[in-house]
Amino acid sequence: MPVPLRPRCASTLCSVMRPLVDGFGRVHRDLRISVTDRCNFRCGYCMPAEGLEWVPRDDLLTFEEIERVARLLVERHGVESIRLTGGEPTVRANLPHLVGMLAGLPADLALTTNGSTLRLLARRLADAGLRRINVSLDSLRTDRFAELTLRDELPKVLDGIDAAIEVGFDPVKVNVVVMRGVNDDEIVDFARFGRERGVVVRFIEFMPLDADEAWNVRSVVSQEEIVAAIGAVFPLEAIERTSAPATRFRYTDGGGEVGVVASVTRKFCDSCDRIRLTADGQFRNCLFAVDEFDVKAALRSGAVDDELSAVFEAAVTAKWAGHGIGQVNFIRPSRSMSQIGG
Image: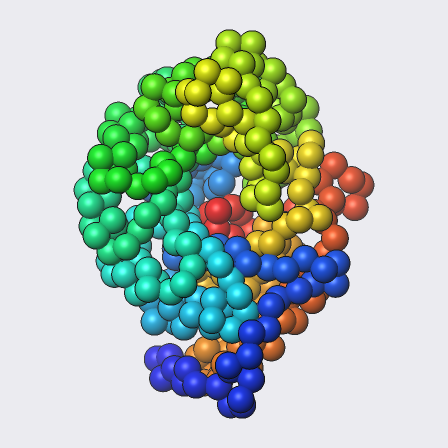
């Protein structure tokens, strides 16, 4: 059984803001929290088709442990945004309860989901305090969707997006991983879908996150290609870049906007401000990190806040300059995307 939490600090430093700054001057304000490694889909770039050996439930962080870590990172270390991810976060029981626990923190709270259960959960999530949501969707074609996810649930996902709009999430974003020869012929279809539904579509360059050798740089559809394909049908103009990972473009006719996360061809490591907490309590300073820092062990051994802060600070101090995708010394993460968190 976990040791009872001791949330109070061991020193007066608790009241002093201590931003998490790495050796390259990057200040980390964006926290991704994976609440489960489990998923009801089997997208090939996220996990093997046969699935994975799931983390035992007792090894997952409890909601109380997640809330304590999030609160410390927000109140002491200046984290400004929190995104709940998985696996598929909605398969974690009582997720709206966790949302309610986090919604009171002075940080922007969002969720990334595959959307398949949103019709059932959208209202409860909104009532708990969630305001923004991203839905991952890689094809608008029924047969292709089933091939990519090994699940025939496209109608449920589309209905989930409608449910998210109906309950007032703003913005509703749709994340599309673009893969050459797989779904790159749907780029304009997705742009049209976003314009018609009033949602923001974000195209994501295909990244080497699977545990095998399936990824190849030739399978990456670049930001330049994506923007050119959309702009040929719906003219675009660039929006000034912020620290967010997506480069944004607005439609010149006022029909909304799209974004491109160009992690491979236009990497944004020099402005990255993300840190990650896995479902089993490992703290990661980068999606592609090869080292993890054990927050769960600290929590369950009765660590006070100063000791937890020392773990966060050590992790951020160790952060590399960049992920190195495409370079000869690039090392893939040893864990799949579903195990790390989106």
